Amino acid sequence: MLLRPLERSSNEGPELKRVYLVPNRCLGCEECIEACKREHDWVACNYIEWVNRIYPVQMVCNHCAEAPCELICPAGAIHRTETGAVVVEDDKCIGCTLCNIVCPFGIPKFSEEDRHAIKCDQCAERVAAGKEPACVEACPMKALTFAEVEDYEAERRERTARRILEVGTCLRRFVAKKES
Amino acid sequence: MVVSLLKLTYNELVEQLNDDDRIVVWTCNDCVRYCGLGGRDPLDALADRLEADGYNVIHRELCGISCNRGLVRNRQTHPATKPIYQDATVIIPLVCREGLETLAFVFKKQRIIDTVETLGLGVYSEETGMRLNVPLEETGLEPSIDGYDLAELAEQRGLHTGPFVAGQKAKAK
Image (cartoon, rainbow over all chains, first blue to last red; front, side, top):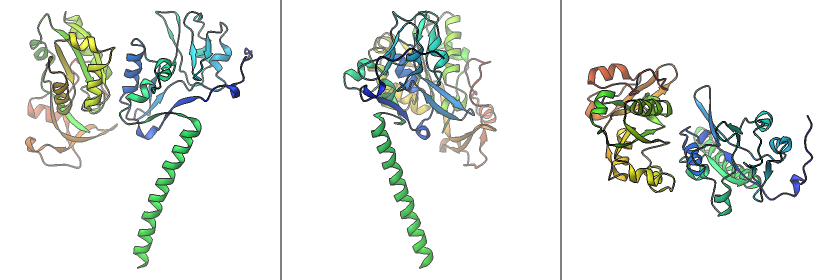
């Protein structure tokens, strides 16, 4: 596959905050989709996929460090913003759907009405104003987190450590009871 | 999950509407989806049918959890939806009793049509669909591990299994 060389090395880019999902918290209530619609003129850029019709998984653009959509766009309509989000410039987009083809998550969608690609812009205006993306703020189960990867990893470690401690404490009590 | 059944048929519902009503069709997307009353498909089916019958549906609202007052109030105050709710005269809710009371609490100026009866708590599975396991006291039913079938309950109590508009695929069997 021929790709355009990136003008900017992704390592030199800004610290990128992403939307992370804690899957076992998600109810599949689609509040994130509705929040996205309200924020973007009633067009949603995220999805809920149901695995085995039981398990909901919220799918949203990951704003990849080496974004295939950005690399392949022949019109240069997809670029990275100052906040690190990968966005489509509507005016430049020619509607070739190559971004739809290369996205490993199937996130960009083609608007038949506007004849251009639509994808998550990570609520650029909200983030610039210091807010979280609409989907994160709306999630009633707090299944979505907007964080830098290091912070997200640290939060996961802390959460898991807390659970290990809880289980360990329970086990110690159980063992002590048995032994006594 | 909360188990609910419909009190009204579609024809009984439209009897409560006026020709000049500006209607919001509202659905919760949690428990009632598993009961087969609500969710995106039943919402669209009901709104399409109302529009086909000449009613003025100005908005279709899907609220993730309609018993969450914060989420409901968010619709009332969000710049994208605030004008819609200021304009609306009636809300048709596909929600449980708790959701209905939340809607009535938040939207004081609109008529909220009472469409559902909540029977208690139940469990959903792919095999059996939603079943009622812990009925409310006023139902006079005993708690049951196997659960009560919703279609049988609806027949006994003069209620209806959803959705409002037949022929739509609902989540519950």
